[in-house]
Amino acid sequence: MPTKADIRDELEQQISQFMHSGGAVHQIERGLSGRIDNSKPLNQSSIGFEKPKDQRTPLPDVVSELEARRQPTKPTTKTSNKKPTRKMLYDDFGEPLRWVWVE
Image: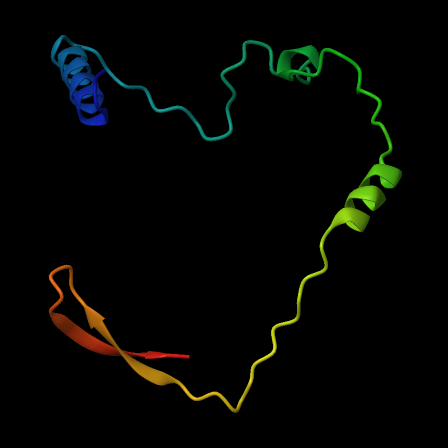
């Protein structure tokens, strides 16, 4: 699979071959369209809206049932009487590394 750099290099090579063989790049005015007949608006079918809108199923009872099954979250209580303590961390070989504070 070619990388982005490979694709970029290949495009640069094609552009340089085009320019060296006498090709020219024409500047197009801003706002011009690439469509042949741009006086009419785009068809709905041309932009992906071929079929009618699907009917949605209302689900408030299902949502309320799911909400009722949820476990209530326990409030986090911070106890101010516990003080952090120092704990030694050891490496894989049992050598002490550093002290850390643990609550």
